[in-house]
Image 1 (spheres, rainbow, N blue to C red):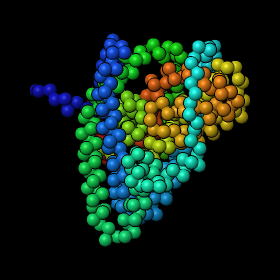
Image 2: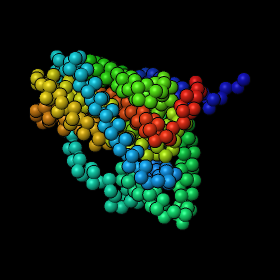
Image 3: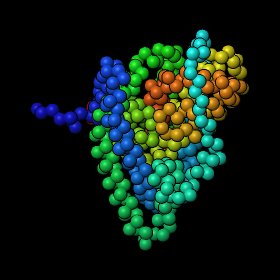
Amino acid sequence: MGFSWFEIALWKRILSAMVVGALVGAVWGPGAESIGWIGDLFIRLIFMIVVPLVFVTIVSGVVSMGDPSKLGSLGAKTIILYMLTTLVAITIGLFLAAVLQPGNGVDLTDAPPQVMAETVPITERLMSIVPENPIGALAEGDILATIFFAILLGVGVLAVGDRAKPVADFMDASSEVVLKITHWIMEVAPFGVFALIARVTGAQGFEVLLNAVTLAVTVLLACVLHLIIMHGAIIMRFMLKLSPVMFFRGVRDAMLVAFSTSSSAATLPVSMSVAEENLGVKPIIASTVLPLGATINMDGTALYVGIVSVFAAQAFGIDLTLADYLLMAGTTTLVSVGTAAVPSASLFLMSAVMDTIGMSPDQIAVTVGFIFIIDRPLDMLRTSINIAGDLAVSTAVANWEREFDREIFDKPLKY
């Protein structure tokens, strides 16, 4: 019997590429940078398809609803559930940081100060949702503005009725074409993942986490607990009466790509694919809930920012009260909404949370400088949690809106 690369499940190919890439990077060291272009090419391919995929699938999805009033119900449920999962994530992160105390005994005096850009005000971010130029928003890859214009166009097609049927048919056919291209790009994923992991390991090595092992363990435990408690127990088992095992089996491809790219936006095409093919989420939900999640749902980022803020307070000897923890929880939940869906974006937002507990600009700069050194491997981890959250919420909303196929969710996947 002949061996076929394509007969191996994609998640196995990606996981194997990650392991081999890590070993090659550890042995090759900084020289692994020379193959980094393969990973960059893979990410460029993904970003190439993100905006067209989001635009045509949302327009097609809204048109297939047949009733624009469903958008209000869908949007409210989606945003409320996203905010709830983020609040649970930050609560878990703050609790573990308070119990494990990763900052006790840590000396930050040798950390190079790192001044970060200011957080974009929430009012300015909300205003930017409405694009001044829709074509410009598409060209710049502005996901929220693209979502807004696509929904508006879809509602417009519904309002016009039969005369707009050629537009509806064109968008429906376009979504199928773009999804086909997405599947082709995913076949390149193992090679891109190999190069990305090799470059990170070669540049930083495995020992980088030893500089802050307690912090790294705290973040890892928080991520695992959030997956089990929020997504596995609360959403899948309690809310939906679905198997958590089948859910995690269905999302593994997307989580592995998220881990290697550290970008929710770059993982979006994969998320949409696994939502429809593995989880039974209908395109109408996948095309609206997941792009929104890639921009506003940052569970992993929220718990990470909270843990680092407590870590910094402990390292500088700042005593935290219950009011401080509540303030950090609220601030982090809001701040995480403004996180860009790109690698290490949370570093730009930590100052807003640390400022709420009275840390000076110098202390914040030193903390971020220390975190910056070890941020990439932790960023890879929390991005996987973000993606799992997006897919859990999309599964829940699909259930509530009766746009869910239980048979697809329960079907055995290729091992």
